[in-house]
Image (tube, rainbow, N blue to C red; front, side, top):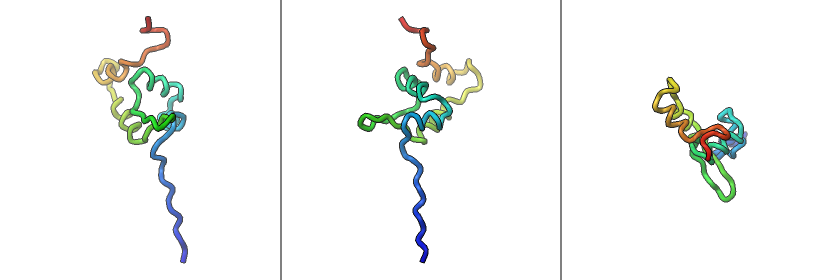
Length: 88
């Protein structure tokens, strides 16, 4: 009798470097989004910040825009500023 190996489950929670790689952005950019807003939903588990792939997919899908003048684009970019701009 041959025993089947259990299939490895996909990670339920990704740490910042893995989530950033999944999104195709730098970990620092993801950290900035977490600080200023506009990024995906995250979870704080003890001293660890994690993301689920479902939340990452939702964030990507909600970022769909046809123009930089669309309401969705403006709302997504509302919290994102470049270094040195928008600060007092």
